[in-house]
Length: 193
Image (cartoon, rainbow, N blue to C red; front, side, top):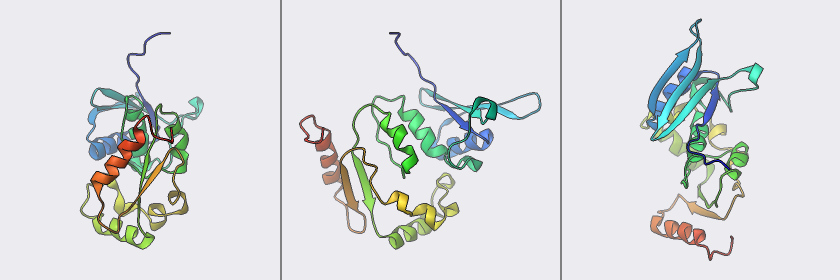
């Protein structure tokens, strides 16, 4: 079997320039530029995350390639880019709001998962999002999200990929204790393995 020396994640989007700019602004990826065909239409883009190159390809029906989730303005790009970069890593901590459609991609990762779920009532979460929307980096897109996108039945249940640690964020959190529990669950002697 040949040794794999490099994997280049390929992300497909309808709007390559917007996705390119979103990934650069939201994640601090290094811009690699956007290539255009003779008609001036974007056909390829690149961004760099450390040593990892990420290719951005146009959505094309003839190749069966389409954008994940919502495609305009780079929405959907955040989780897709994170998973692509994490797939080239020997270990990672992934932080996001993971919708059920990401479960298959997460299951494809080697290794184990511990899910840390931050929990609070719906009204508290919505109030927090609205209050911080004006103060956060524009790449977070909080001001553009609807209440149903921020809190809906798809986000209430754990993903089921491993043990779950639930953190009640309406009270002070003992971060050291949470980290210790995550570490304990990754020990080989942990009963869930």
